[in-house]
Image: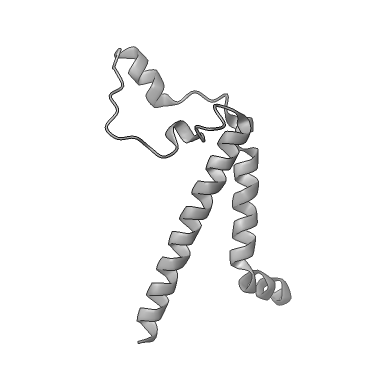
Length: 99
């Protein structure tokens, strides 16, 4: 059992990336789900007012349009940006702890 635990500990970043990529790739399967906020907006006849121009509005890449591949690529881009920020923050915090 300890060999398996050591394997996981030594490769947790790689395993985390693999799990996140699998989640992003299967996410279009759940695209049928209706957003609760959209339901409330329709009930109150609210009007959407854009505050700023998002780089990837509605989780799509504008060049590719509203396709499954566009959503997958937008998810992967967001995943790697988040992963980079978290790893950089972890590196900075670890460096501060060693001082």
